[in-house]
Image (cartoon, rainbow, N blue to C red; front, top):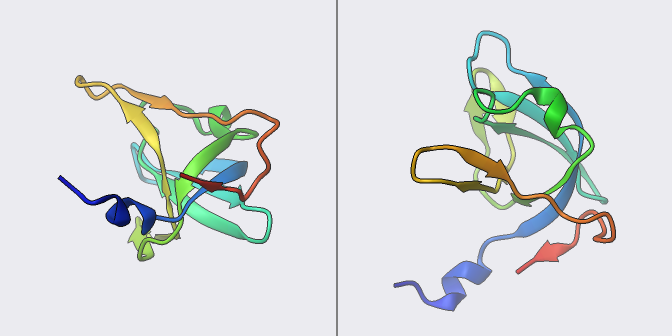
Length: 107
């Protein structure tokens, strides 16, 4: 079990996916350009085997922002997209309604 204080350490924010493109030479990686209101970040997600890049563009979703940057296939990712995953590995996007402003904190 974790104390709730551990959860509060994560910076969860609503982001708007402005652009999405498949990472060259990768089967699963998609590079996202995400607007968080006061900044834009590149975030790489590994769901290209289940979603096409164009399916992600124009969506508001939830991201974790205060993770260490990580290079994936030469692209630096500065966050992580939150998803729902079934036991069989099928993933589902968790989208946010239009009324929710970009950049707001999620808790």
